[in-house]
Image (cartoon, rainbow over all chains, first blue to last red; front, side, top):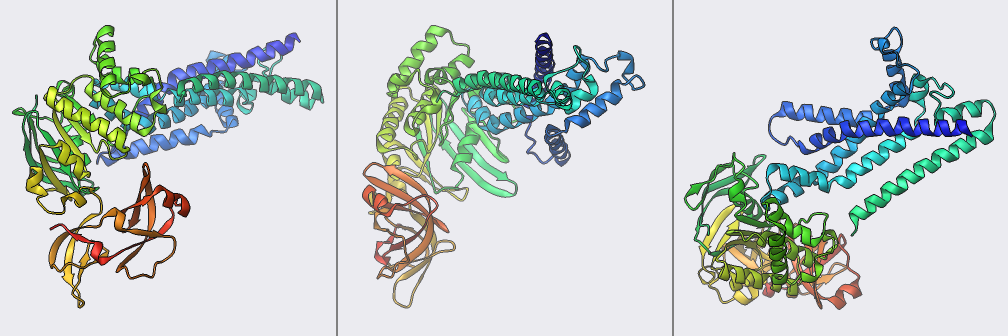
Length: 222
Length: 351
């Protein structure tokens, strides 16, 4: 029982932290990219813009194992960041998931901002708003999309296994999360335990989605 | 109040000339209308005067001040109200939507409350204050959008077909308000429309814009000094084209990809009008004595109460007026194929 709690809290801690940090980094970048619509004739800038956006979209579907592998190589004792001694710690797992969630948050924030950017900006300007007031209003109007980016990122993080099993090492009491524990229990044939952990994972995902969806619906309030 | 001069104004979008050396002057507190078919450049012209788009060349002058479009022009923007054809409202209450322009100007709470309530009363939306603006009907939304632009009492009000998507009741509320603020506050108003009866009711002067060019400018009588004004006043189904005389003594008018036959006899450049109520709609090809029959697709169904106006695209857009009963009996839907027919004698020569 105690171990289940430990595993659950670690899952929440790792995914929660990575999504919070990821939001702090991803939302401003996503908003910036969404606001910058290079329509002009400066083809080089437009090309760069298209490249950045395509890269973001590609990274949204980045396989976690690849992220895990790259982070492992970075953090391994012989790797460039080996001196940090982070391999097989929760920090390494947070870093892994951070790399996975940032493109998701950037991508969804970017598209939700850019879809309303032009109409809301023009309306705000026509009503006498300053450039900053306009920017603030655009972000406020995009808040449902931004919240969606956070929900999606958390859903991806909490259910992710391929990356954190490599960089966390699935060490009992230390880096074992719900998903990695399910793998171990399944391999050991403890199916009832695996199913219990699975149920907890689903419940967490459901409760968090439920509360965020309620907020979302309140914001829409047609 | 603001007087406006537009001098040799042109606007190009990726090689396409939308406005072509447009020039006119509008006096202080004048009610000025811009009429013309869809795609004539009306919206672009208003957006440029409204300072949210910049011209490719030419000048806009407000009270002797030449506008520098490279700048933010915040102080000038705050004297202008701009109402778009499609109302754009924010995801907040109606009250907060209308209060927004006052908030960005840093007004205090009480003053905001007073002004918002006053303008809501003016537009008969005082019972909507707490509602979320995104849940309003089209007519309500357009009145809220107008309230947003009136609440800070702009010196210049720009309206882009403000009533084109509205039923007659909502349209007349808006028309009354416009007349009143033009009269009481001396607000200079520029309104684009293709509703000619509205122009007659509201505007001091009119500019006819077509293909990005001003074709005429003057008072209503100067421009529409024709016997067929009442029919023309519905504003749709007006086409310009080149006419030639057929061997049967009728006129064949090429209106750009389409040939229309008419009973009048005139050669050269003509403007014609087909009354929307004279066009017959059919689900199958029509074999009849009507000289004009076309095939098209329904692009819009406009509810006008007991009557319904159907916009049909057949190379050009045609408006057809039918009863609601016909709409229901024929079960017409947007996107459907449809056949049009009208008699050569229904085609009226405007000039």
